[in-house]
Image (cartoon, rainbow, N blue to C red):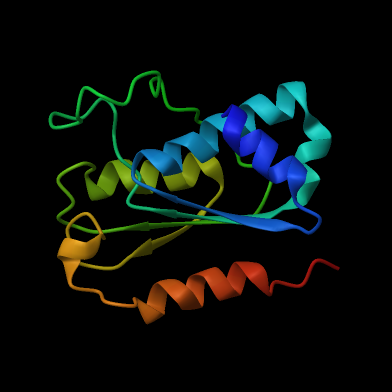
Length: 141
């Protein structure tokens, strides 16, 4: 979280955060922390694209990432989109949808594409780029 805080603080412009798997959870933890400790920091965030959020309480979550439970279930203070697959081994579609609902995120189910990574065969993933562009170009007025 410290690295994310320093990175956001060092930018001159608004940022769109992108998190994949446990990185999605990092964004949720960071937002909850920033809301308590550094609320002004949140004004620098234009939005967040959260792809294949993993479930740290799930049966196959790896032991290496520690400190990601319980997952914050508070509304994110910026627009966000959660993208999930119906056959992701690290999160059920129901859990991903539940994360999206609690975070106030738009939920996008992209079907059977596994963990939405290189093994998913997405290549440049134009649909993902379109979601990112949507957050980058949203009207802030």
